[in-house]
Length: 75
Image (tube, rainbow, N blue to C red; front, top):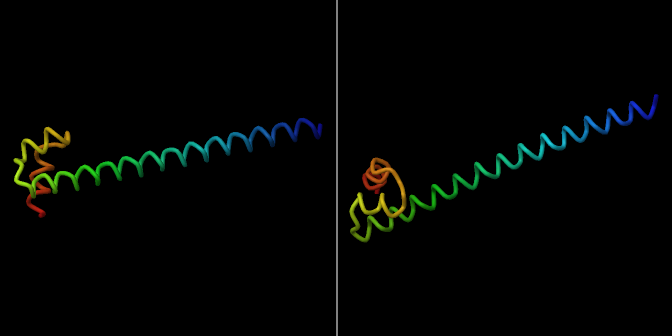
């Protein structure tokens, strides 16, 4: 009986560990995406500062033209 209880407890603990690992991985992915977006927007600012057109910047960095326009307005 104790063995069955121990096995069930181990199984629950493993499931919790898996769930925690998934949550950490999701948070890491979200953080990486956020950092990449911020990096692309910084590059867009630099290119706009150098005189590149909104359309060119949008094409090069693969950002939406409206987003690049907003970045330019915020500069």
